[in-house]
Length: 102
Image (cartoon, rainbow, N blue to C red):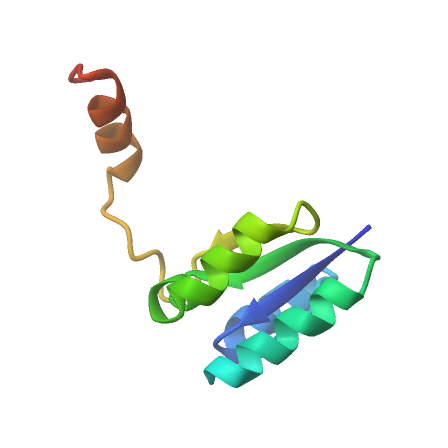
C-alpha cells in the first residue's frame, strides 16, 4: 500500500518526497480532478494526503471523494504555512460535543 500527496505547493511535496511519499502539485480545479482520477485508478494507493487549501478552495470535490470512496483514505494535512484552524480547536470541539468546559 502506498501513500500519495496532492499538494498546492512544491515545499510540501519536497518534504514528503524526503519521507518517500510521491505526489503532485496542482493549482487549478481541473488539475485537482485529474490528479484525483489518477489516484482512484491506482489500486496500490491506500492513503491520499491533500493539503488543507483544497478543502477550503474546492470543498465540493474533496467532500465528494471522501464520501463516495471507501479506499483510498483521504486525509487533509496542513501545508508549510500551518493549519487554518484555531490553536485550540480540539478543546473547543470536545467542549461543544460534550457540553463541558475542559
